[in-house]
Length: 298
Image (cartoon, rainbow, N blue to C red):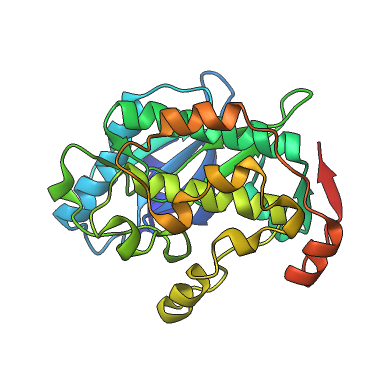
């Protein structure tokens, strides 16, 4: 039986060449290819499950990613270029190819971002969230592996990718329960079981802490252990010399719960006015003994 790779090569070859598998995510297969007419590299994404069949729910979710991504054009968000179906009705999307590494890759390799870089990159992520939320869209799966770090010039910048489980927040009934990656999901007791923009903001707050310390704040993927690890998120996470720093107030929604007035826009205003601290090395070595930064990305 013909594979999805063979199907893509056979039916898309007039427009695309050198189609090779890059990887597989929870919702789809990712292929890299070269557009014949322009010579540029692109990414082709197809749903998982070929050729067994595609449930209507899975098809709707896959096509929803294209609609959500196409709705908003932002310099720090992946762009969709095309969408279509193979002769047997199997859908595919074509995205820009982003040359770089994920934030997960950088941190996993033991790299540590400098505070100015964290401020710039996470500020860009927050700007994407603000734009999404303004349009009634929730990303729903913000995490290091969905953030690409690219460095086309002097300074690196961020591209937010993978809107596979994103949804429109004005239609909460479409995704009534929490999805996304367990480690970056907020406790139900903090935000409730419905996905709201606070879902993205909680994940963003964890990313800030994770970048500052260079290690996952909630490293487990076991629900019971995650609950225990989430309870340690609070003022005591900060070294004594930084517990009076404004970042404590800015990130307090991680352990106190967010008021309804908390939005990506007003969080962005606070973030822009903030000067990030540099953690004392002694605090890092005691709190995260497995952390051995090998490179500072400026």
